[in-house]
Figure 1: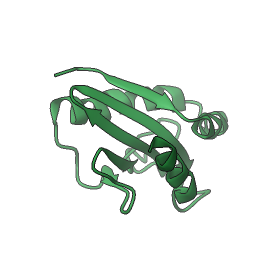
Figure 2: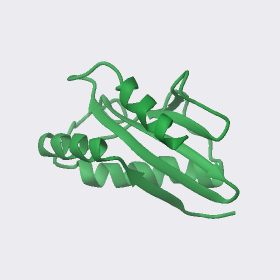
Figure 3: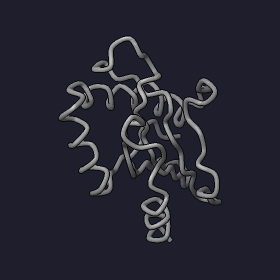
Amino acid sequence: MTNKINYSKIPEFEKDFKRLGKRFKTLDKDFELMKKMLLEPHFISGVPVPPKALVDIEGFCGEDYKSKKVRRFTCASLKGRGGNSGIRVIFVYEKSEDIHNITFIEIYFKGEKENEDRERLAKFLKELG
């Protein structure tokens, strides 16, 4: 069993992240913390996550992959909100044998946008094969 996740980002995610990072100065650090404290313990060690912290995106999960949304993202720039920052992270998780892969698709702030870009997600999954 591997204790590492291979992370990647699509170009649109990079643009989203850069734009949000200008508004929320701690986003880089918060994002790394989310990977270390939420994704890695859950996917590598099977540590259960709080309900609704990490949810499947219905209609976008397959046999070999899961499309997920991080709903409990703590952003230090949004003081006092804890995991209810309103920042959402969309990613696709794939596991083949002992390799974990996570591709980040979108990051957004609910104050600006209500839901994930399903067309972007569908396009990525189509390219995934």
